[in-house]
Amino acid sequence: MLTLRRLDNADAARMINGARAKAEEIGVPMCIAITDESSNLMAFLRMDGGKVPSSTIAIDKAYTAAGTRKCTHELAEPSMPGNPVYGLTSTVGGRMVVIAGGVPVFADGVVIGAIGVSSGTPAQDLAVAEAGVQALESL
Image (cartoon, rainbow, N blue to C red; front, side):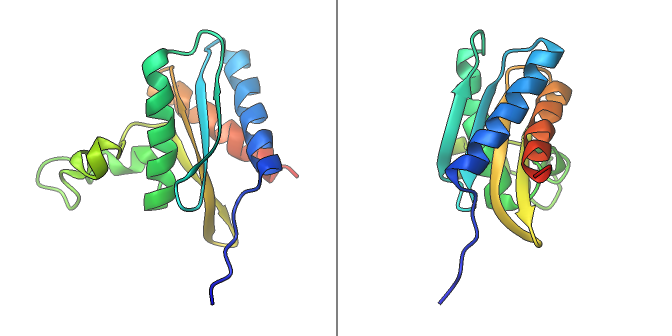
């Protein structure tokens, strides 16, 4: 029998709030998604002004980060032609995202969930996602 560790609703709310605070600080309304360790959506916020297509992108960034156990930007180079995971972005119905803004959440070396953020530049998305993770880790 396996014992699973995962984010709970309070964790997801902390992450959303931490990410939202960073998005407000930098002045970019974001779409923010939290998934559990199995890439299932737990929480989502589209801030006022968040780009409509970014809703799906944020969810898919979190999906990718939890599923691969890697930050989404770390998958960009390996998924280029001739590299080990070329074609990754066409798998799972195109849900795999290799743009910055998806970050897995670890506890004791095990993925317990992920955050995905979209609506800004890749660097802004990543900074907001990292702020969400930091809000959880600061407990």
